[in-house]
Amino acid sequence: MHKKTSSLLSYLLMIGLLITLLTGCQTPNSTTAVPTKTIVDCLNREVVIPADPQRVACLYASTAHIMAMLGQEDKIVGIPNGIKRDVLMTYKRPDIVSVSVPFNDGAINIEELLATNTDLVLLRQSTADNAGEIEKLSKAGIPWVVIDYASLDGLQKAITVTGQVFNQDERAASYNATLQQTLTLVSQRVSGLPDSTRPRVYHAVNEAARTDLDGDLCSQITDAAGIINVSTQGGSLITDAEKTMTTLEQIYSWNPDAIIANDINATNYMLTDPKWSGLKAVAEQRVTTLPVGVTRWGHPGSIEPHMATLFIAKTFYPDLFSDVDLTHTVKDYYKQWFELDLTNADVAAILSGEGMRLAK
Image 1 (cartoon, one colour):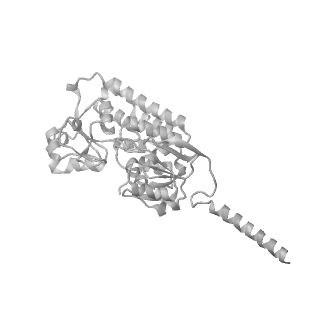
Image 2: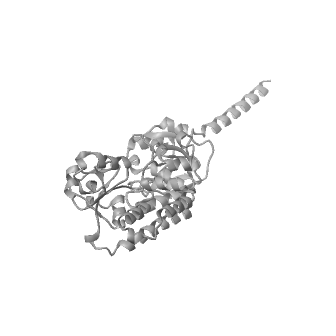
Image 3: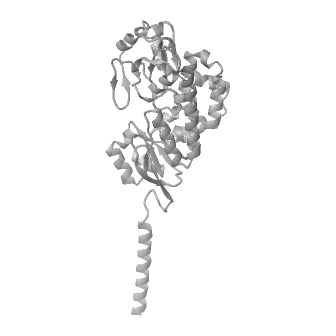
């Protein structure tokens, strides 16, 4: 009896140990081993990520836009709240308004993020530079990739990296090729224009007094379109990591021939506030709102800067681009890259810059 009892106890202890070993290997975010791969992100970090990520939290708006272009929008499980305001994103992913928001005001809500059961996080450099935020991801065992850019070259790299993340290298390369072809087409047509014929233009970015810095994505857009961006010609600018601001006094000093704005609210403000009425561009009603598609075309975080370049060039040099039918071009673009069949009314709204980004 004693031997039998001892054998039974040994057997039970062995089973208990086996169960402990099996359960002890599990983590909240990964109950089974999954294939992985190594990529190099936009900070040139080597990152080990799932070979085929299925549940992705986009903590930077542009990453969701790029995923949509790559046909990966169904894998998005977390977004910044602003994505819910993008009308074409609701066309692309009708349930986007119910997607989790684990990132607000620069901070990760780790409990909310864990609830999404994400297997990968895409974020921007400013989040990666915040040690406290990255510690949250490290403790949770969630891999993260930096997708960020501040120039046309940087955007193309970001698209390339995102393509590698989702095994969509060919589509990413094709989009970059189309982007470059459009920029080259516009530049070739405007390159011979003498400076004396080029309009001096002020670009308002979101806010009336927010503008461009020489060398940033938006100034590269205006340079490629063949206009003179007054903000890059010298003057009073206050710049931080997020934006460049100027003053109304400085804008009066520039007294631009025209104004472009990437937000309809900024346009309406400049056209109706008496303080702006003395500007030549305002007095002559030469204030144009840039289009809003999947992204705001003229925004520093746009993934569609080539479309902004074409629109600006056609606006200021219509004779050079008389062969370009913007309605046809926009329809083809969104069909090819976002699989959206847009109506003429949709396109008109996009080109007007009004109604395609919902109010806060």
